[in-house]
Amino acid sequence: MKPKTQRQHTPIAALAVMALGWALLGSAAQAQTATPGIAPLTLQALFEQAWQRQPEAQSAALRREAAQATRSAATAWTAEPVALELATKTDRPGSNQGSREAEVGLALPLWLPGERARKAALADAEAQALDSRQRAAQLQLAATVREAWWAAQRAQADQALAQDRLLNAQRLAADVARRVRAGDLSRADQAQADGAVAQAEAAWAEAQGARDAAQAALAAWGVKAAQDLALADGAEPEPAVPDATAVAAQHPAAADWQDQAEVARRAADLAAVQTRANPELTVAATRGREQAGDRYQQTFTVGLRVPLGGGDRAQAKQAAARAEALAAEARAAAERDRLAADIAAAVARVKSTQAQRDALARHAALAQGTRGFLDKAFRLGEADGPTRLRVELETAQAERQLARARIDAAAAVSHLRQALGLLPQ
Image (cartoon, rainbow, N blue to C red; front, side, top):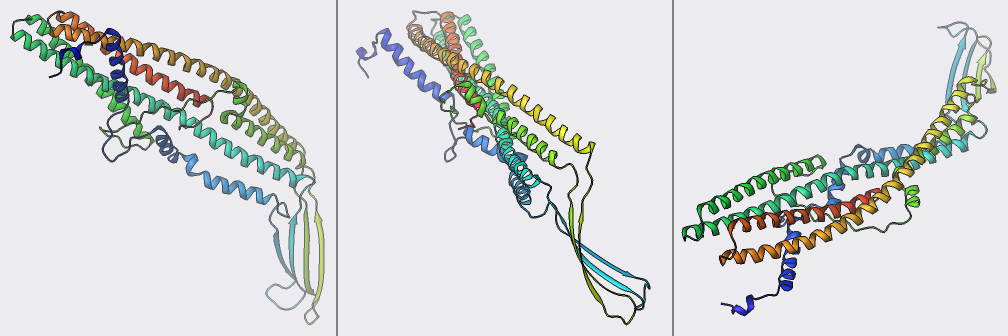
């Protein structure tokens, strides 16, 4: 047995011990005990699983292949594939008599002036837009995954704290029952203690259901819903925040609209030179005779087919492309303004939640110390049951507030990363 002198602490020392104990308890409350041999699920792993299930991820390789083929077509010698022309002519069908003529030719569609370079520029813009659209889709998915992730984290922390509250209530009720049997407390105290246990059981059942529902929601992202699903801590590294305007200009969401505007501009430039269909160069060889028995004669033909102008249809195509470019540029500008405001708000939210977390950590440490003092006083008969129950409830509330504040602070950092266009890490 330890000497009694080892049980005497100053209030400051007791608070320090309680604060350290709560720090360890808080870490345990934010993550369930992982199954031996199975690593807990991380936010980054959840995002990667979710992305692999998205249509954009599954079709990305084929879309890049199509973009590369479009770019290769812009470097071809002809505007369209070469056409083979075959023709035969006779004045006596079904007979070898009379005149006969056979022709073999090639039709080569020619580029319009400036069309080839502008089509190549359009293909490059479309390839760039494809990459930016994929990054924007990843970021949009990341926002949804982060929301589900932090909802599961909050539900898991609430369930762990509710379980701790239930254990404390059961321990207190057992203490009260022992003292009622000894005649130190009344049956009213026993009823209050049993009522606290019933409230803790109800809170635990509610938190357990919320946790199971939140974890089941992760099944939409390819995660197998299970009762013992272990989630990692989930905190992402806090990023450095440069100038919000500069970040917004390079943000994937704004870059997506900007690249779409570039595609529309390149399409308008191409439409400006495609005022008519492509001319065709025809090269043909003809072999024929006038009458049966005559020798076959060989001739060669070179021709040029020049379509007339497209008129209003070409102008309509060009105007529609320029309108798309103007609309996309306006959306990009509006998106940059919105992103700059979101980044500023996210920075303010990080500072606010971190300050709140630190204040609630001090409050929880004080509540833990008070509960320890009252628990000792209650066992020595120096405190009544109602006071002990009230302090227990206040401590449980302080613990829950601190757990929520810690998760909110980590979620605020995650939201800041989202506003900066950073994927889960």
